[in-house]
Image 1 (cartoon, rainbow, N blue to C red):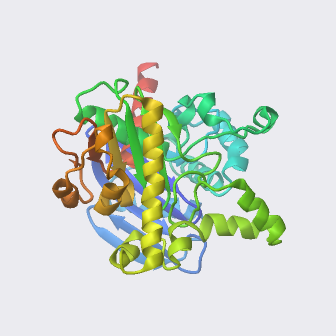
Image 2 (cartoon, rainbow, N blue to C red; image 1 turned 90 degrees about the horizontal axis):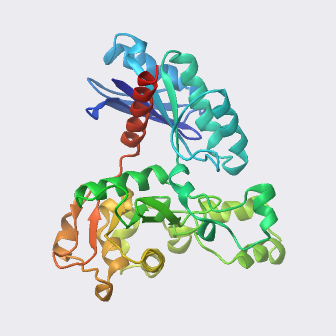
Length: 398
């Protein structure tokens, strides 16, 4: 069964076509710079394509994807039985991936106020695919769904309770599809049931989050109402004293839009290093440039604090997992965030750690009480699997 996975950003579409349940990747690609004067289309399958053209809307981008698949991979659009869509915010309304209907679309629209930079574009992808692939089952997979199991003691803010009751202001968490994928893969590697494992999963990319997974379910996570809370990230500040924001607004007379720009796009690694938000640019300058060194050390320190706090929350820990572009490819971050934690039963094998780049592997010593793994995330495969299961169950219930 062919399953297409679509991930629509503000000006991009990423896609992968799978054969399920074999989990074979047939083709993949992206449409970038949608709405700009020149857009870029990339495709890898039976042939490779990279070309520049003007693509005004997400709808046009999806039409191009469908046309390319018909020319290279399929003979009929109906061969694609399901399309899985990544949706960033599902609020409190979605605990798992669901088949899209009018009610689901309405709820996603209702949560736009919680993710104004993401949900509208996710919806554009869903609506475009409904029109272009009318006979395919559309499935929405939510970044927030895995975190709906977080209890109130961990997901509420200590502000008047009425703000939660009236406006749903609380921690929602993100990267849930990734955290769920690596948590399930960890249970497989360790030969445990998916609900028989306690693990701390660290998703480290340009956006970063860490999750405490208790008995296979999310118990706490670092991102909050928005993706701004938690770890230091590429351009986001992460945790910050709310008084700093008040001072920027009142003491420095900055506009709300200016403060938002600073906290979301000019802070984090970029803000401290004053050079780059990309580890690939920063690593060669580590221990050579004072601000770069400080930025990386702060990044690792904040991560270490979260790992330590989640160890306290979970009690018994089976494993710690690194994923995402930084987690999978930067041994220095893995080493520094777990150094001097032998007392807690975490013993990194430096030789193993230095050899693991972008692939699955254990980087802890044999006598480490808590195992440490690098597991490349595969959110698209997780979405494809959910879509396949929904289609299968739908057919069984007919």
